[in-house]
Image 1 (cartoon, rainbow, N blue to C red):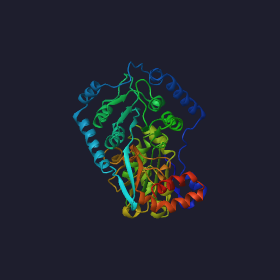
Image 2: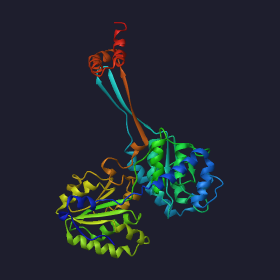
Image 3: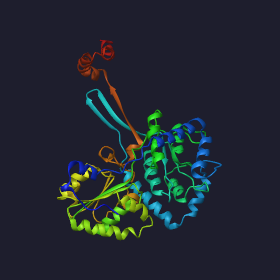
Image 4: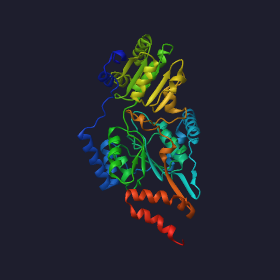
Length: 434
């Protein structure tokens, strides 16, 4: 079960660092070599390697990699009306929030005759990786597909590991269809990321890849982003995590449910409770034991709880300090004066405020994106948004009089830096016709 209560006041600086340490991410030389071999195979053999690796790792000999429009149409008919409605509702919620993120060009005349513009344009082609573990993940399709759709990417490619019949789940195909995705391939693992980076006979290369995956997928993204010119990834990935800040008035059953909702993701997930109430922590601990037995993934959650923390702080101000130091992926505030705390919290991928705002809402249907920075990267990386599917660039247009007004500044600075050609590019224009 979860570790015993930790009193923050009694810890040394080293013990505090240890208390907030995350589970180690596998970074073995063997993993790196295995993935490098897969990437090299796909780079040299293309589709042939994809078929061979799919048979090796997924146990299915495919005859084609592409999903046809007929398969999508069949999937739409196969789903129950209730499930179709749920996917549609989530799609509309996510679309509603993300639509407000559309960027507009900004133009400023910095001085008379000098006009500068910041323009935003969609990335031309993007790849969406959708894992296929114990259950399909249509929510991830929507979280990646909606921003790509709204941004206006010319090509959006979805890849997902096939099941033992060489098929993708109906929910995946229906969600992809809602997002206007027509390029869908039955390939997963490191080989899928390699196909998206290098391109094969069937899968054309993309500029940027998005989506979570196992350690092979994560390693492939890392290696390829460093090897292939012009190929980018969404963000560094680590195990899922949630941190809850709660006071004595909070509902311990709600808190335990929130902690377990993250713990069931994987054995390396981490959950943390910060509270100034020892009695609340005790009640939460009891609730965790009771609720854990009811979960279908109780063994996974139980393992995750072993590396999780119940921390007693001096007050809520200290809880805020600890949270900012940790920088959680998900941050839940269950306190009476949540707005005051919210104004002081800086580092979190996504924040959930109030007793009736479970993290699960953000995972599926509140409208915010559930692709978030983990492993402390929330201090420097933002939650996924339309900006991640865009590139920004500047345009400047200067009249002769505008250049004249800047010339003295440019000449002086090029003198300081010893860049004669830079200076000449200005003065030659002003000498002409003078």
